[in-house]
Length: 252
Image 1 (cartoon, one colour):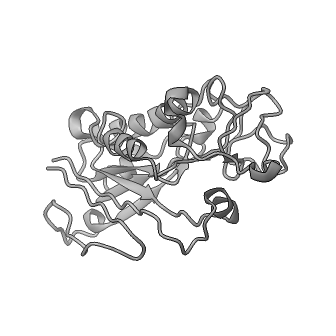
Image 2 (cartoon, rainbow, N blue to C red; image 1 turned 90 degrees about the vertical axis):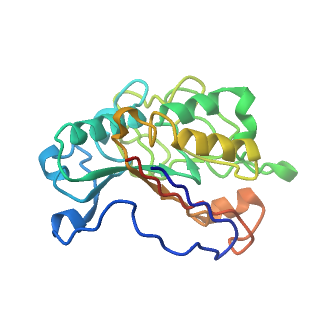
C-alpha cells in the first residue's frame, strides 16, 4: 500500500493519520530514530531493530562527499538495502529536501546540468545590476552557475573560500557533476512540471519505488523560510503564500 499526503497553502494541514502498519507496544518497534553516521555506514544490526530508522542525507558522508562525482543518493539506497537484508522488524525512511535542490543527489545534479530543466530552479537576483551575494563559481574547479546556490551545509575542501565550515570534506576538489558548482540550489515550486517531476521521482527507484520495497517512507524537509537569502531570491517575504508539501508513503 502507498499513500501520499499533499498540503497546499499557509498553515494548512490534513488531519494526522495512523501509519498503515499494525501498532506495537514493544519499545523498540514503537521507536523512530533519525539515524546518521557521517564517518561510515550506520550500524546495520542496531538499525534493523528500530521501529522506523530514518537515514539523514549526511549518512556515510565521509565517503560520498569525496567521491567523483558525489553519491549521496546511491548511498542512501545502499544503506536501506543493508538494513532490509537483516530482515528485522524495523522500517526504513530516507531523506529528501523539497526546498533545497542538493546536487550530491545524482538525479538532481543531472537536472541542474540539463538546459531543458532550467525552469525547475531559482536564479540569483541580479535585477537592476545587482551582483550575486554568494559566489556563482567554484574557485577550485571554475564551474559557474546562474542558478542560486549557497555554500551553507555544503561539502568543501577545508580552507578554501568562501569561509564557511565545510559540511563534508572533499579531496582535492568537490565534484557535483560537470557544469554544476557544489552548493545548495533552490527548487522553483511555482513550476508545475518541477512539482510533477518531484512526485514521480520520490515514487521512483531511488526512493519509495526502490526494488524489494526496502524504503517505506520519506523524511521530507520543507522550510522555505530557511534564510533571508531565500526571501530575496523569491522577491517575497516569508509570510507570503507558498506551497507546502508533506509526504508520507509506505510500501507493504
